Length: 116
Length: 114
Image (cartoon, rainbow over all chains, first blue to last red):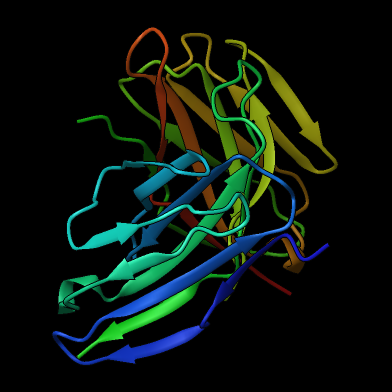
């Protein structure tokens, strides 16, 4: 199984450019997430989705947009890239979201983005 | 603001030594997870603890959830170079009666010298 696949692995953007980070999962998970990880910091939730057609903001949504037209895909869009968006972006998916035993999030390998 | 503090931030020890890393908060968690992340990869779940005082073992790794469910520890016995990586704890906190969120700590970067 491929699990969670992110593309591209690396990207350099100029200030003001736009791009879409792709994420796809083949586990038929309803729940998908986008995080950013800055050096020396934990993961911050940007957006999440509980199913196709449903998205919601996380802790740090400003400057980003998402869509969820299918169960498999959850792209993250940067419209006007800024240096503050330089980070490593991780997509994750899970079968459940809020179980007492704790859900298991499966992460992609990440996209390393630099905005110069 | 709910915070998960991990300590130490960095730890470099010799192969064969024992170590403990900590995850602390003032918040009560309904569950707490430990992940390991290797360079260029996403985090991979190691364990989930749910009950206060719970202890789980994964080979040489021992995870403990505090009695009050506000803290956790990870103890590694006889560390090996393969244990090298970034260890992240993540706690689930209740936001409302029907919603919750996950908070990640900033991680402990562990290096095991051969």
